[in-house]
Image (cartoon, rainbow, N blue to C red; front, side, top):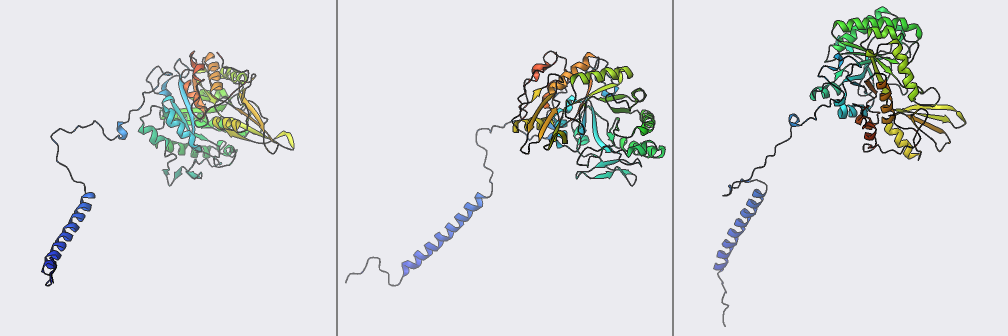
Length: 450
C-alpha cells in the first residue's frame, strides 16, 4: 500500500513547523507592538534635501495687539482733560458709568477713546453718620473703610483703563442713591449728615482715603432728593470739599438738576471746577407720561443756567434712555407704575408690540404707545442719537461744547458716530446707518435740526 508523500509518523516535520510558527507569532507580536508605539510617539524625521519653508507666524500676545489710534476730533491740545478750560473752543467729553448694568462696562470698553472724563457711580452715603458705602458683585452694600483700610470699590474699570493706557481721567461719583433697592430711591437721611459738621468731617476723611487709593483726579458730587432744610449744610459741604480737593491738586465736579430753585447755583458754581447740568427728566416716574427732555425745554434750561453761572463752568449732561409709563386698566387716566428703559429695550418693545416710534413734532422726542393683553396702556418716551445731536447743536449755538452722557450702557450706540463733532455738516447723514442690533423704524414730522 502506497504511503502519503507528506506522511510523518515520528512528527519530525511538525516540530520544525511548530518552531517556525512560534517565531513568526513572536515576530508579529513585536511588529504590532512597535506599530502602536510609533503611533503614539512622535518621531522627528530627518530634514529633506530641500530647505523647509518657514512662515512668519507667531503667537499673539497681549502686548502685541495694536490699539486703535486715539480719536482727537473734539480735542485740539494734548493737555490733561481736567486742565482744559471748559467751553474754550476745545471740546471735552464725559460720561457716567454705573456698576448695576453690565452694558455700562461694555460701552466703556468700546468707546473709551471718545471719553475724556469718567464719572463712575461707585460711592454712596445713605445715613446721617456720613460713612461711605459701596456695592459688591452680589449687589450688597459694604463700608468703603474697614479697619482703617480702603476696600476696593471696583475690579473692572481701573484695571482696564490702566491696561489700555487710557488718557481719560476718573472722578469717582458719590451720591445718596441706594442702588440695592428695586426702584429709584434717593435717601433723604443724607440731610442729617449735611447739617452735622462732625458727620461731614467723617464723610470728608473717608473720601480723602478713597481718592488716595488709586489714580483718581478728583470727585463728582451728586446729592438729590434731600429736604430743603439741608441746603445750608449742602453748601457748607461743597465749600469744604472744594478746599480739601484743591489743596491736593484735585478737581471737584458737582452734578445739579437743571432749573431747580432749591439749589444756589451761583454759590456752588463759584466753588466747583465744573457744574454737570443734568438737562433731562422733564417727565419722570412718579409723574405723568411725557417727553424726557423736549428740545425747547432743554434749550430754555441752558439759557437760565447761563444767567447764573459762567459758561466756562458748564458741562451739559445729555440723556440717552427712556421711561415706560403703564396705566391702571380700571382707571386709564392713572399711572400704575413707571420704569426706566435703555434705548435698545425701547426699540425692542416697540417691535414686539408692533408699535411705530414717532419723533414727536413738538418735543422732538421719540414716542410710542401700545395696549397689552390686560388693556393697560403703555406710553414710552425716550432720548436717542437724534435727540442728542439736536441738543448738542443747540448747546453749541450758545457757546457750550462740553458734554456728559447719561449714561454708558443705556445709550443709542449710533450716538458715538456724532459724539465728537456734532456740528459738522455730515453729522446727520452718519445717523442714517444704524449699528447692528439696533434696527428701528421711526415715523413722524420731527427732524434733525440743522
